[in-house]
Image (cartoon, rainbow, N blue to C red):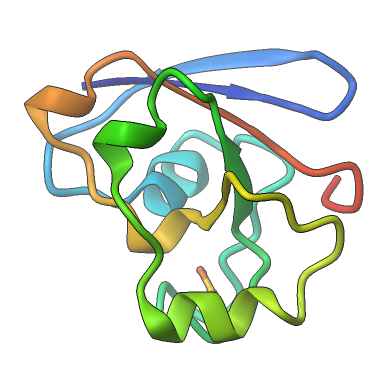
Length: 105
Ligand code: FES
C-alpha cells in the first residue's frame, strides 16, 4: 500500500510497502526523515509521532491506552496525533497521508 509522509517543512515522501508493515517501519525502510522508531515499535519512545490527515483518521482508528500514555511525552500533540508504530498498513489504508511534527527532523 502507498503511504505519503509530509515533513514539517512540506517535503513529501511517497513510499510503497507491504500490508502488515507498520507506518513507522514504512518510514524506516524508505529512509524517510523525521521518524526514528527508537524503541523498535514497542510504543515506548514516541519518536514515531505523526499527525494523521483528517480524511484518514476514521480509518486508522483510535489510540490504544498505552499509545495515549506514551504520547504524553511527545511534543506538539494534537487530537490527530498517533504513534506510527501502532498503525499497520492494510489495503484499506492504501493512500494514507501522515504529517511529521516540527520537533522531529
Ligand atoms: Fe517507539 Fe513508535 S517506535 S513508540
